[in-house]
Image (cartoon, rainbow, N blue to C red; front, side):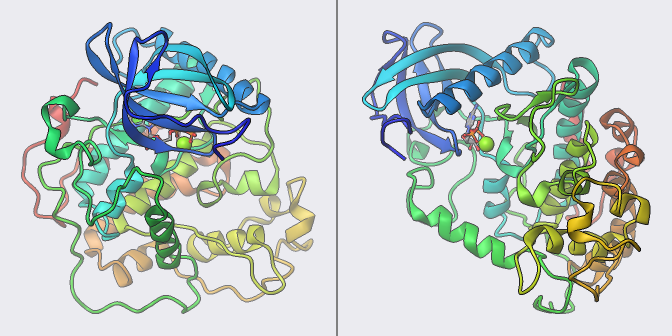
Length: 414
Ligand code: ADP
Ligand code: MG
């Protein structure tokens, strides 16, 4: 991808914007961009520099992202809404073309890195709760105050708020800002280590209720303890695909595993697609496994597997919804049954949490009391972020990690 139209190759020490920003090290990358830690010589602080690929379609996406980020910043002068802050933007010319660059506040590891760091064991529910609060506050702001749908909510696009000054922590300079890497190699070096891990992760995902999962021992749930003491505040990033609810442009939105049923069926979508993704993320944080990891199979497509997995976990889709989308005929017969996957193995979420993930019955019941409404197949029945924020689960204390009584959120500005 480091060719004409693609990524801009950066070397440590490279200057940007006439020398204002100096590249320090790579923080991450996405389909459209690489993101670098940079030093802002004017403001004397560290920032994240998102350098877009240069081809026309990527430049256009960056223009759009900048527009959305400006609206976000304008509506939140005190930067307290749990959404990344755009500081500056400019164009940078290099051998591969002209790259739009966004200067963003410097944040920490993304939640996928956090999940990996837990060795896919999942986090204590008290930590999941803290993350949920931040994400819901962000969504409430985006949805209700700005009319913006994120459309690509996933662990990679939610970042911990960094508590480490990269300058004062030279020992960690090769590490991600908050978490020690579980093993050697350069986490941010674009190595294949990440790809290998992603493959392993895909294998470990819930994927199939139908007996292909490993059965687990009888021991009680043991969420990762290696995160004790880490503050779980986080912010939502990556507005490259965000849209205003009254100016939607894409039919197919969201990353596969976090995609809502109405998007697959093409029956129209709104803010509630973000609530679906939110619930998938909360499940993943609590268990370490993706909630839905559909695969193409013999005689059926990824979409159909996805719909089947949803029904196995959440119950049969109401006929009206099943047959109501522009693409319904591709998947469902007129009775509302899947055409090519006939035998579903139902395993309700509460049973899954207790049997596979060894949740205590009470923890499972309370957690799902919060989560299940967001996974309503019917988009208009899902609660809004504002309604979710009022849910009592967010103020509970769970027993699973025997966590301290200290309420991390009391320190937050909300
Ligand atoms: P893309 O649109 O290409 O997916 P993102 O905005 O999602 O780009 O950024 C890609 C990755 O870069 C993120 O998953 C994250 O790991 C890292 N990153 C992005 N923004 C920041 C930031 N402000 N601070 C620290 N790391 C960041
Ligand atoms: Mg991204």
